[in-house]
Length: 144
Image (cartoon, rainbow, N blue to C red; front, side, top):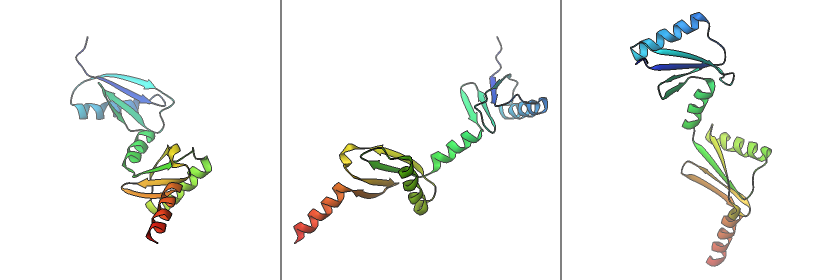
């Protein structure tokens, strides 16, 4: 049994000897010690590699970078009574991004909405539900 940390490199294709040597050299430089290396080929890894040292994973794949970027985007939550069609989802997302820039789009189905939709981006809410429109009409009528 060795006391060296185990490092697993996961890539879509087997590393060339030159690539493997470069990766090993960089890992050695970062962790400052010798290690046991295991190479795993997984065709699901796209554009880059994953490095696991012990229980910690470093994902430097395109998917990993996109996930980090996604987590930094503002979230737009759209609340509707029924599931949106792909076309509706696309149009709503485009409309929000036109005003807000790139967003992380989330859809919530709430049967209490009855009709229309509610959009929440950060702390700003746009309420286009039938219930909110009826409430506005009610307030107007009460003022007369």
